[in-house]
Image (cartoon, rainbow, N blue to C red; front, side, top):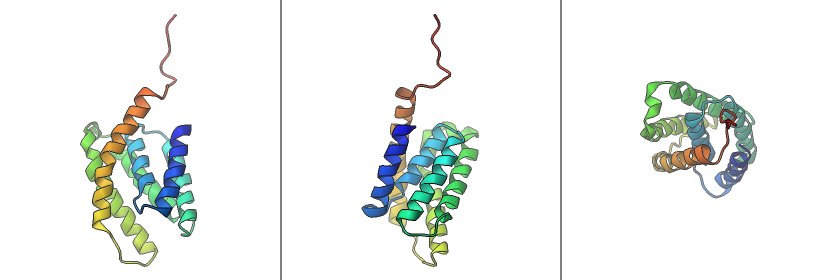
Amino acid sequence: MKTLILILIILSFIQTTILSLNLVLIILIARSLIRPERNNLTAVFCFGLLISHLTLQPLGYLSLIYLILVQATLVLSKSRLSANPFLIIPLTGVLSTLNLTAVALLAHQSTVLMPQIFIESFLALPIFYSLRLWEERFIVRKEIKLRV
């Protein structure tokens, strides 16, 4: 989790300065599909506050939006649909559209960028597989115990 937090901090700086893609949200959605834990909600809230602070938006708006989106992902991850790994593409597209719409409504803007949504949706699949590989191969869980 420490490595993931470090990567998310770096990506939040990249997201607010160079790229306009919601990379942090994509990684948090993928993580909540892979591991439905309560730690995801804490990370989502903290990184929503960080991104709100870095983009000079009122604190808490992005945190609440991110919490709602990841909570919807956690509810969906408990269904049978979550076994299909290609679910991440339409799920990220829908959640990214909801995120951009909510941010545009709160900021009193009228911009929803469809190319950005498509790029985020198709970036979600390689991010999902790389995060799944990282979680399965390099993270030791407490359930694994060696018998002597």
